[in-house]
Structure formats: C-alpha cells, structure tokens
View 1 (spheres, rainbow, N blue to C red):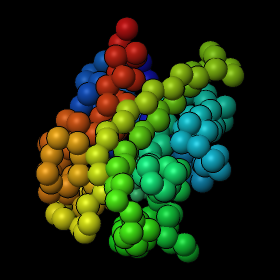
View 2 (cartoon, rainbow, N blue to C red):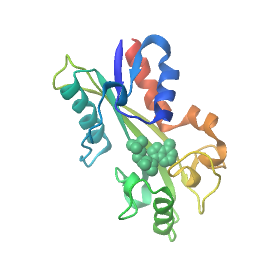
View 3 (spheres, helix red, strand yellow):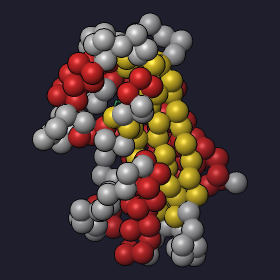
Length: 194
Ligand code: IMP
C-alpha cells in the first residue's frame, strides 16, 4: 500500500520507513512531484497537520499523513508551541536565535518545565472530510545553557525527564527511542497495521 508522508526531510522519512518496514511504501513529496509551498497557516499543531495532510489528499489523490511539532514551555503559557520554527522574530528555522530567545525568556523563571509535542494527521482519499490524529509527547526541562552538539532545533537545551543530559548530548539512538516524534509515529504505525 502506498502512502505519502508530507515531508522531504530525510531523517523523518528514514525514521518512519524503519518503523513501518516493508508493509507500506512511504512516498515523499518529491516522489509524487509535489513542489508546492503547502499552506501551514493554522494556529495549532493539530490544525497545521490536518491542513498539510488534506492538501495532499485533495490535490494529489494519495492517502497521506503529515506531522507538526512544537516545544511547549509551561511558564510561557505553552510558547513557542506552534511558533517553534520561527520563534525569534524575522528568522526562519534559525535554531541558534530561537534557543537564545527562549533562554532569555526563561532567565528569571524558576519553572523550566517543557514538553515536545508532535501531532500526526492521517487523511485518506475515501474519507473526503475525515482524518485521524496521533499525539506523541516527551516531557522534560529547559537547561540553563546549551549542552551537546548532536541533533537539531532545540535539542541542546532540552533535557528529557529521567535524564541529566540534553537530547544533543544523549545522541540519536536514545533520542529516537523516547522522542515525541517516535511516540506519535509508533501510534500511527500500530493503527496502520491493524
Ligand atoms: P517540525 O514541525 O518538525 O518542522 O518542527 C517545528 C520546529 O520545532 C523545528 O523547526 C524545531 O525548531 C523544533 N523541533 C521539532 N522537533 C524537534 C526535535 O526533535 N528536537 C529539537 N527541536 C525540534
């Protein structure tokens, strides 16, 4: 069975292909000739995941799933959340600027609890207006300064619950075993193979 994952991110594609094995043929956006700037204008992770998955079903006629992830910090009312990629003003996916802004915002806060949350939306062509959502969460805290060099995004400042090191220090093997994305992907995989 063919199913599109609405991404061209090689890391995410490898991860999902290794979890789903040979039971599904996972196609990327490139594989279906989609080079469009898919709208991602919702103000929630759920809204963006639904928007992306439905766009592919409606315009390309494939079953599709799409993900959206945010870092939700308790003492900042859940920010940066859906704005995680562009948290530092005037930047786009500038991890260094995003982390520095977050560290500044938390400088006088005692509560440094946070969670990464991934939402995956699965939309199928036979269900014209329907979809199914899957959520993966990893709880943790925001470190006082950057630690470690592996990973991407906010990894150097996120310390998952039960560990004393950041995602960037723990490395990919440990991170992929406990991460928000892995947990959401496992739920999707269990649903698809039912
Ligand atoms: P996306 O929805 O996967 O593109 O994630 C949005 C933003 O959240 C990214 O640009 C990163 O800043 C951040 N992010 C998502 N996943 C991770 C992660 O596993 N580690 C660190 N940052 C992440």
